Image 1 (tube, helix red, strand yellow):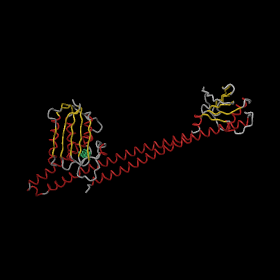
Image 2 (cartoon, helix red, strand yellow; image 1 turned 90 degrees about the vertical axis):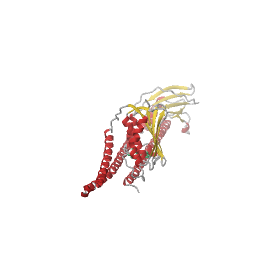
Image 3 (cartoon, helix red, strand yellow; image 1 turned 45 degrees about the horizontal axis):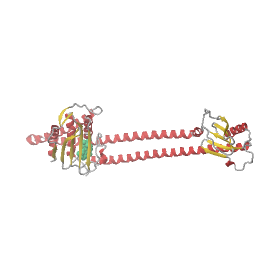
Image 4 (tube, helix red, strand yellow; image 1 turned 90 degrees about the horizontal axis):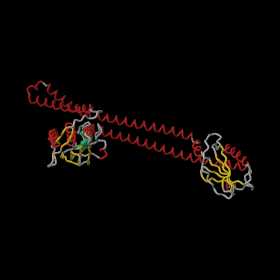
Length: 434
Ligand code: ADP
């Protein structure tokens, strides 16, 4: 049967899974929207470029109607106009035409077809095989600085006029201002949405953790209080005076439960007190052998109660020594030992220590229920408990490992976990040597 708490955790796990999916889907949607928007911007850019090219060609066609550019009648106009590269257009001319009126009409045609950017016009003479003169048409709408530019010579058998639009790209982009502004607005809205989603997720996550904590808290305190209530009821019975043994037994129960509660409250206070501050560490010379002996002595009653076997493996030849805060380090080891006992139905624990390069390792290995790899990352978070739906009666606040990690961090050490569900768990602390 699942305990109330276990079911609570199970449902919470489900809820946070749904939440994760919602956040993931929303993130994916945002990425898709951004992708589609970028695709459209690119499409519109190509379209604007095409429109620009078409308008230039239309203007040149108009020019052929306005001015007599070639001597013979024009049959296939498209053969007279070339577009060798994005910024350059050239059109064929005869050798006899009026240059001034060509410029005048070209300006007019470009204006009519909304080609409102500046242009350099060069006149190519096929006899001399070079440009014989240049003109600069300023933009009607936009003001640009004239630029010095390389004028590529396209070798042709006939004269031609080359038009170069130095600011073509800038102009095309300026035609897209509306799209840029609307995209920027969309992106800002999406960023706002993503940020709110992130905060919503975090808030919800914190709320869930808080709820878990309250659940654990209630669970942890309810049973001892109920036991104390029953015991005090017994002690209040009048005939108890005649049964000193029973009286003693129930008084002991109350005392034990009080001590248990006291311990839990102390634990909570300890965490609350060291919440934000860096853990105060007072380093002293510590013998690892003594430290482990003492930690094991502390959990001995619990080990006896659980009929656990505890094996201590230390290097025979050398005495391991450390500069560490003895009390804190002992607390860390006791916490790990308690967990090893708590999470193993028939505990067989191996405690070992030794040297690894410049470091000293302390390892606590059990044959308990193990922890799935997907939970390893979050184990050391405060209030985190593995959502084991079917293991009940294992009490705790999810504070032990977070505290152990803080202690190890304060010693500039590392703690690693190696665990296989159903086989067991090993926590290994690596601490800098002397
Ligand atoms: P708790 O008070 O719940 O024991 P801890 O921070 O000590 O809190 O441990 C966090 C969680 O990690 C536990 O709820 C348990 O699920 C898991 N855990 C810790 N140690 C072991 C272990 N030796 N074997 C299996 N699971 C463990």
